[in-house]
Length: 385
Image 1 (cartoon, rainbow, N blue to C red):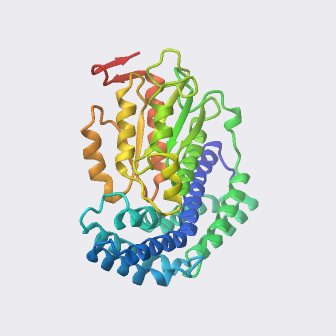
Image 2 (tube, rainbow, N blue to C red; image 1 turned 30 degrees about the horizontal axis):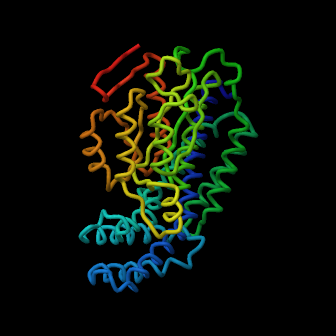
Image 3 (tube, rainbow, N blue to C red; image 1 turned 60 degrees about the horizontal axis):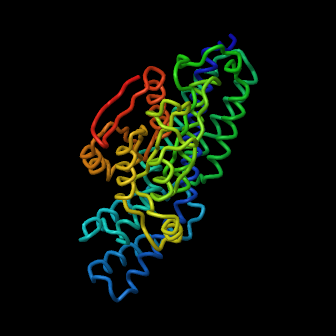
């Protein structure tokens, strides 16, 4: 039995998505001990501060007591991640009960930026789900009469079982990724010979994704999702990106249409810009550095201000919002209060790459059918070309 072109294409895309998911898991797994150290350092500063409210100091001391045990676990074994997730959720709830928890510099803001940003990618059995899909691929290919593929499948399956062992570490995930890449290289790739891409050729074929994200790991997650989009669309489409880390620089580029970042409503535009926005971003490059030094926390109002600016200009930019489960409802209510509430919301959690990729592909599908200009200022109007 040989590998059919369609089967090979489907499995190659599945494996590509699993590689992206595993790379993300490994990245957040590696970054988790650093986040724990940053959270305890921040809590120590609150405890030592005479100006801090006594109740806040008590919760900060609880953060130190509960998280200090994990500081030396670098790299952190898989068996410890569940305990970190449980303690992190409990401490986040405790910090959220404090008055003014949403203010810049609050303990909750710190835990959200250092702990929840990592645990959101690791909880919910993320690793087990990724490995389960790999087992499905193994069962589909193992029956084929191809010794090289069957051997690569067996090695991949053995590596997957190692990843799920209690003492596994991020290096074991990287080893699994390498096995998947070797298997993927053995499958025939007929994309180069394709005459037309999956999406019908019409209107815009060049898409520029503006990634507004200050966190390195989540930025890398979006970049990996773009690889999935490129593979899906095929060689006749171009998908590139630019990164913005704060409100000031993102506003300068996205709220003021220019030849480098053309937008939907421009008649001359040959490139469709799509904004991928994390609401919790710093206000300026200077604040970005303070956030990286863990001496400041980004406010979600900054991302919402950016969305208002994008929507208030004539050349409207389709937007996709990155959020976390704890903020989803508030983000949806706030965004719906704006003039146009047609955002996609991507929760930073399991299978985010698939959801990010699918959200971008939906924008592409709309763009290939129509060019839509939505205007809120100076008056509300819509124009469909």
